Length: 102
Image (cartoon, rainbow, N blue to C red; front, side, top):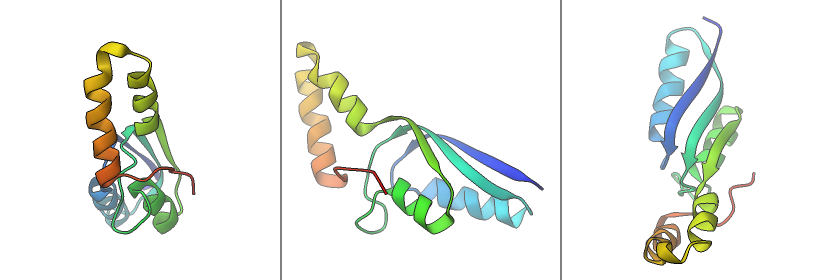
């Protein structure tokens, strides 16, 4: 019973958050928000990011500690991370959204 805050390490496609919301509701409680260590800013089931879909579909806030954009900024500031930067940019180009604002 009551309100439940969902805490997760990363959000990619949003599957674990959707499953958590359903389990919480089935137990008679209500999810009140989601805190994510890293939002990969990955597309969910459509054109929105998974975090945007959770916000829209469940009307609950999704608060990341860090985002893929934060990670890219960190990598861009370090010459020794250029190989990683290229890989992360390729990942975003393939799976991600540019902006995660709803």
